[in-house]
Amino acid sequence: MNATPNTVTVIRKAKFSAAHFLRLPELSDAENLQRFGPSSNPLGHGHNYEIEVSVQGPVQAETGMVMNLKDLKIILQEEVVEPLDFKNLNLQVDFFQNRLTTLENMSQLLWSRLSPRISALGFTLTGLKVLESDDLFVEYYGGTDQLP
Image 1 (cartoon, one colour):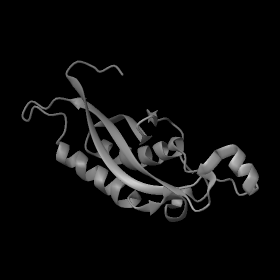
Image 2 (cartoon, helix red, strand yellow):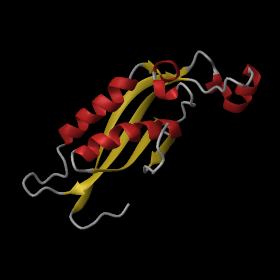
Image 3 (cartoon, one colour):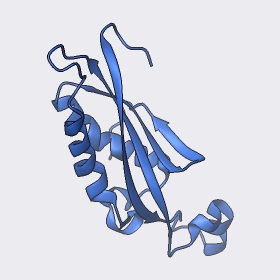
Image 4 (cartoon, helix red, strand yellow):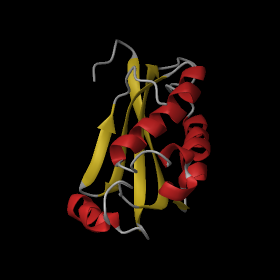
């Protein structure tokens, strides 16, 4: 990630807990188990997710900050924690009604929710990391694809 002069990237974290399962309805239980392992359990399983959001912009001379981190915390609370915390992603989040609850899909959902809010304040969302565990995560840097 290259920054232009006087541009700084700030990173803020948020955490939420949610349940999900990985299943394709056109596959049998045995086929889902073969493809997704124990994650295919139709009763689901849970994770303590963590998201790291990278926001880039110029350092404001009057504050010495890129953006007020309190504002970023509020955005993360409203766009990530409140809609996803203690939810079954498959059953309670419309975005996942017709797509698998993978980290890849979740990163696209979160980008679509966060980017407009951050852009409206005059800053750029440059990346996000979604962690399902200490050793499993995705990084997403946006794209031109429009989510259906």
